[in-house]
Length: 426
Image 1 (cartoon, rainbow, N blue to C red):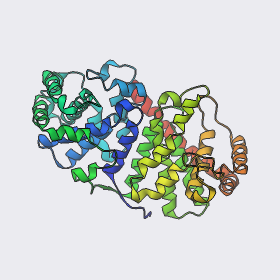
Image 2: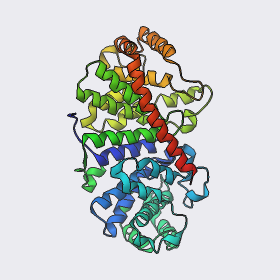
Image 3: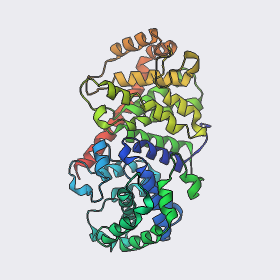
Image 4: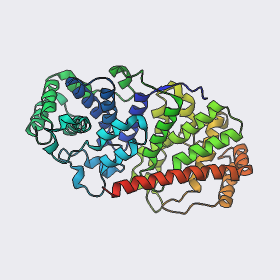
């Protein structure tokens, strides 16, 4: 059994929310603001306890299914209707992703309906919690869409309230419009929205900080994060889980402790968290990246580090995840660490990431076979890009590692195919 410390559910959710909102300055902090507004609306109408926490989490993750920059931008339009965009229903995608994590079953349903197709549901929604609580997310989302960033929010409140009120019983449940009007009269409500500082703060400010994940649920939750990161593209659909499996396998072969093997698996699922900053359009580009595009790619491990470092209980996981592109010759990124600064866990992550990546198909090439990949890893070890001892360990146990990796990736690929099928059937 691992001895890793428990972490607040809400803190992890907020960090994922921050990562997703980094994809485009236009949506910066959007999900956190929606989470805050939804939380205040729910409190205003008397919702409390676990249901209130689920509404907050749903607000923080409501756009997790909007997997491209274009989709994220579209959702900011006040009159946006997900039903009219036949190319991709991001609310359904979010539901399909979140429902995989059992503790988020209600959260997933709230996300699924957060863009109601019309106001026909608003009067009867009070009898169906899933729909009604989705309307809370919807109203919060539209309020934030109306706020003009960079301008004094207090000078905008009257027009925002007027716009929301004009859609009462058309787009928004009447009781929620009335609750919003009460909140909108308070300057503090608007100023709190404008001053949500980057960082995990909801646990303290909402009183939900005591909601902790045990080891099994923590691993399941970071696996969910891996799906949100990877399912943006069919070319990365199995990557994070593959790195997690490969790193854990190498850790066991290297006689890492049970706790450290657990940390390697966690780091594998989270190592590309910062890649949510990278537009899907770059990830799926079939040709050579431009200098500007490659510069964007090189930011991702930095953001993984910045997002995860907020958790002192996950310091080891954070370093191992974020240092996966550091090199022993000091020419890696983003920190250009020297050989004596790169911990062994990060060295394992580096080998696991390269091996998993080069054996997967990409838009610009097919995956390498085992023989080719070993040649690449050996050359990188010779050039001090990777740890030679870890590469040697992988080479000597290649069949065992590949068997574990492939079994994990086949399961993930099936989950991705089910995810895609669920969306195409809508």
